[in-house]
Length: 84
Length: 292
Image (cartoon, rainbow over all chains, first blue to last red; front, side, top):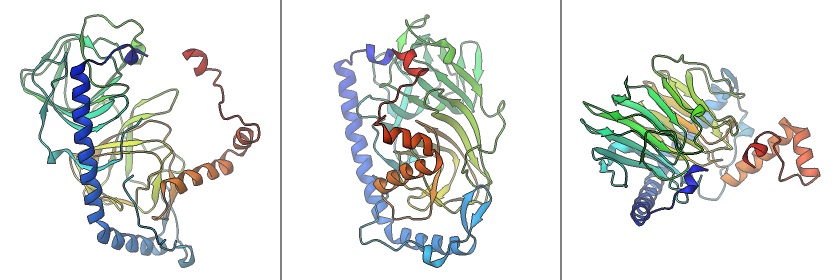
């Protein structure tokens, strides 16, 4: 592979190090923002559960299926994680 | 591809930085969207300043470029918004310049950004893989041909499909009032950039113009909606299969396990063959022979 033929210079290594540091900071900020969105997300989940029981769950294109109340998944005790 | 989960991120919230890597001419600024910690592969929003000029040359990585605003002169050809390029590693492009400036998405797929001045291809470069297309004017919007597929009102233009991995690069749009009430995950990483418009995803909220995500495999996303519609660029690093469900609480590990279980339902013969005989390092008579 052509990309592997090239040895990284010190300048390139320093650039990568700085960019990865900044990316880590961006990631932490995203995690904090998504944590702050949790109460709103809980409401959106409730609304989603309502819609799939009335308007229906999208199976494929315009094919929808109404989900029965007993099919709604229970909320687990663990914290809901959206960013991995 | 070892990039972290960057979702959501909006490039409008950060300033441009000058490109300082060796080989690149002055007048190129960038905003880093995501970066692979191992290879240096990355996706950037790039501003080529008015008067920017890059001599003929190549990169040591496959490069993808989508022009979003302004224009670039590539050799003798003037390329405006919607022009998409896939430039295989080592393939030399002619001089690139802009009189009035240009805003683009720029992706390096196997390594960090690099530029080597040359009017000839690097040894081993595969020029047959070069793609240059005006995606706005020369391609039609299509209904996705995926099974299961997205809800009506989400349309795509395929820009590139990797023959071996089925990785895709594509434009997609959502019509005003689009909604899709399911949760999805894929076996591949997925990346997208909003060229225009705002969409909503239940897990991540609203993604506006300039919004971006790099999402590793098996991460829940959806339901989706867009009030006024969107135009976006997307990529995957493998075959895009929609694993739809309605459990917002499932984890990446549970989703991966479910995907494997579903493989048993969809491709039982293949699944049984792999599991029953320990065929966990299968040989591809076509592609493996090419890479040996």
